[in-house]
Length: 416
Image (tube, rainbow, N blue to C red; front, side, top):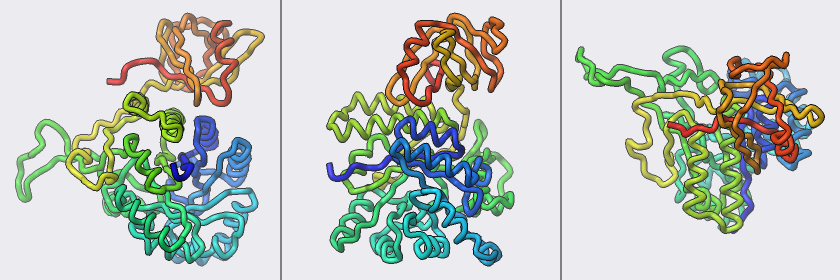
């Protein structure tokens, strides 16, 4: 195998950053309060970024900060705030920024010698000459457009190798896909004045529409709504090919996703990547990983553009987004003296349900015998989100005390 590939995960908050790292991410990307998209994400303050960098670096992971807003003229004339911000990130120890604005990229390269500049997917790079141009500017990595196929990626890497150009290539492997070119969508902006290129996408392509013939009055979609969104991307069956193509980083989309989603997706791809490098990947493992990933999905998935063919199977014409209710809690702490497991509840579960405690490497299935609230009153179910719940069980405590890092809990059911 040519290169030890990076698994890069999203984090929309400090808690999610820690989950991503604990469940196997080699690097995480986050958004700061300034110059970042995802306006509705719980973006990081400077203090949060500092804490996140310390946490990640202590566990051998890197942190990248998105500066991928496309700034308007008044924003780039507001004194020298961008340079100040970039230097703050560099001094904190951020490993790289991700940007598509030539202005932001150039300012980072000129003013920051210890922090890399990575080119965002919004730059829509689909050829080796563009990679070469950014490399000559001083960029260390290019996030390729999501429209790149495996063959495109191979050709780009081969042509770069021919010229001895050692620029990293990053490719999206999982998460939301835009119905427009590499996220350059104006639909949301046009319909509700929310600019997708400034973090405000309303996902108008996923709305439920009625479909009519031009000039007609009779609905064509009588039994369902019509959407024209793309299915989410899932690349389980393409990871080996991406490694062999010379990709340096495999990127998961989803800074707005839950910690359960991040944990499940990162854990799954981590397991698969490690198996590939150990030559232990097989059909059984692929099926297991796909099944695991499906537990966290709320939309249909496809391979996107990776094999170069796009059909109706890659489109989502009838959207039924239903967030999974499997994620039922997160361990708050374990009291060894009292044999208590205290958890923060996220979704409903009840006595006699089977729940699964899991971290990156381990999983333990447990039939709930008794549940207590934080007043030690016995209850028949955990009904209230964010409520503190107590399970008193010496056997369970003895199992979980051997787990390290974050422990999440899900209801063990078959997803329909």
